[in-house]
Image (cartoon, rainbow, N blue to C red; front, side):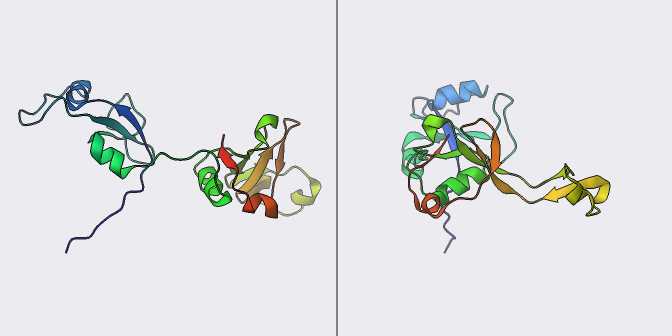
Amino acid sequence: MKDIYESHKRVHRTPMNRLDYNTYRAWDLPADEDGSDEGYLVEYLDGGKPNDHRHKGYISWSPKAQFDNGYTLVRTTNLTFGQAIEAAKQGHKVSRAGWNASGMFAYIVPAAKYKAQTSVILDMAFDNDMVPYREYWALFTVQKDVAMWAPSGSDSLAEDWCIV
């Protein structure tokens, strides 16, 4: 028995029939293929080297039925905190529904090294006074500044998170 795989790819789609896709790629349509087949140009967002200079991700073509049966539109609203965490790990800004009007959002700051800013830390003997920081949550606030942030119990149980 052959192994069976389930797809977990993030993609953009552009409606395009088979002939238009082949023309877009400057390819001849094979004689045994129907150019009027409905489908999509599919651009993969989560890795892979681009294979066309007009795109940031790898592209291919998918027949409409196979695409429609194999992909689900990614929700960007009414997310759980777990879904918001995954989005933030991918570099997205996330917000609670009630925060949006104020322009607030949370995001993950990646691990990095920063120049020591206080005498307390200067006494710690870091190489070149560069302090290693672990990744952490930050919050862009209503005051238009950034603060370190830790989610509350209510935040972690809410299902009104959105990708900004």
